[in-house]
Image: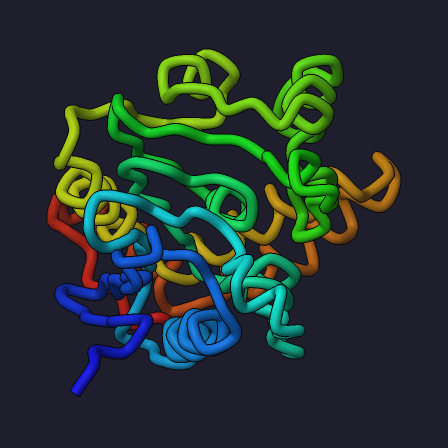
Length: 255
């Protein structure tokens, strides 16, 4: 029996989502997008899962949309989350992309939908859609110019050329550069640092950072308060203060 196109596992509060089509460089078809969406639904729904890591099997992150499936009329779109099962509604909990090899087209847009990026020095990124007379409509043309300078984003969008991991890091698109084969292990180490923090505070902080770029300065304070206010009134906030006073590690309950 063939393995599913998306594998999930969890340990110590971290869910690992693996795009599992190595024979196709993890190109994303409809079934794969549905698998990613289902995994992220699980991440959001289960209280014991606090951080997600998304990666690819077989030495590549993802070569993007499956063009053979596209030629058959198939689209890798899931109504609840968008293309790739993620780009229009990423998880509410922090998500780390662990990138080996190619992360291009829709694969790059999945990376851009993540919150933190750990990349192999051998990784390659880009939006080559224009080379196939396609448009990077899965968030690449929207998110990229919000992350890097306008002219750099425009060059990637209009030439379709790829950049290496060092260049992506210089542009601010990568948090950590690691040796080939180490992206997942280092992403899990980074996830452990997040897990040590209060889960309610993690979600609230992600929400504020990711949404505030669309807020005016006047509304930002009100909206920040709406998101952060319940965290300050939570049991976990009390536990954080008490644990500090007692010089011990806090025990989070997520409430």
